[in-house]
Amino acid sequence: MNKRAVVTGGAGFIGSHLVHKLLNSGWFVTILDNFSTSDIGNIPPHSRLKIEVMDITVDKLPTIEFDALFHLASPISVPESLENPMKYWAGICVASRRVMEWAYEMGATSMVAASTAAVYGDSTDVPLKEDAKLEPMSPYAKFKLEMEYLLRNYNKSEFKCNVLRFFNVFGEGQRSTGGYRSAVPIFLEQYQSSNPITITGDGTQTRDWIYVGDVVNAIIECYKADYKQIMGVYNVGSGIETQVIEVAEALNGEIIHITKRNEPHRSCADISLITNNLDWKPETNLLSWIKQIK
Image 1 (cartoon, one colour):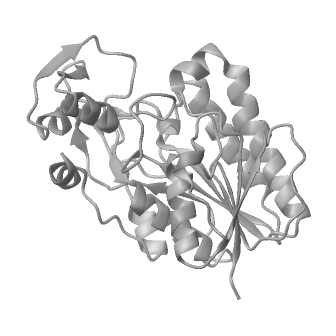
Image 2 (cartoon, one colour):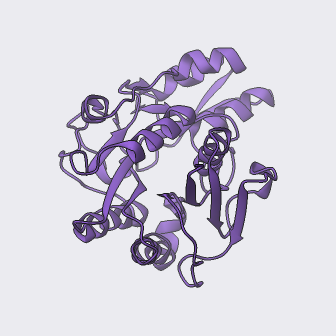
């Protein structure tokens, strides 16, 4: 019998990759998405796919049966969260609570929710373990951490939630503009347009880039885990600390430096918890991927 999944934010960057993987594996999938930052073009029509256009912070959620719930929907721009924190509180905390309570009412027993490495802030305790000190630097990160506490405290004997802290996700279909943008698509767009690659500061700041296909596999493996034994928060990263300047230099283009912004200087995941507890490990290296597609 084919399984049924609900993916909130299923038309976004990570969500659309997850939906494709589920459909290719025979699942029936329902997407809940308001398309405020996502694109319907990410999701071609499919006989086993249903799309519900809705705002999960306020709209009545559908009465449906499902086997798995993947909660990825979230506003995602750090600068915008500084300008409009209430939007982010509603889009992260209110939405997550509504989805969690709705799932429980629908008879679901578990869910997988997306969080962010931004909850660690500018920690010097690198590589970062899940129990490292948490110092979020923006409303976006603070509300993601509040969401984690909410979901973990809601855990009942018959309903469990796993939270995945995504580090810097990259891959096909990622936009260089809009809320979910990062150095990789921006650098690629600049290189392909024959423009200089712009780096904030001297480029020695580090990030842990993780391929979107590896992220999708981690999400699915987390769903498949035995929730009686494996439950909690997991880092999802490559475990490789890479300087921003290394990424730019891999493109062999002209590089210019601009004023450094307020951001963490180092970031890298300790992924021993997820690799030891789940049947998962990252497979795609960022610098190798860039060389293949540039």
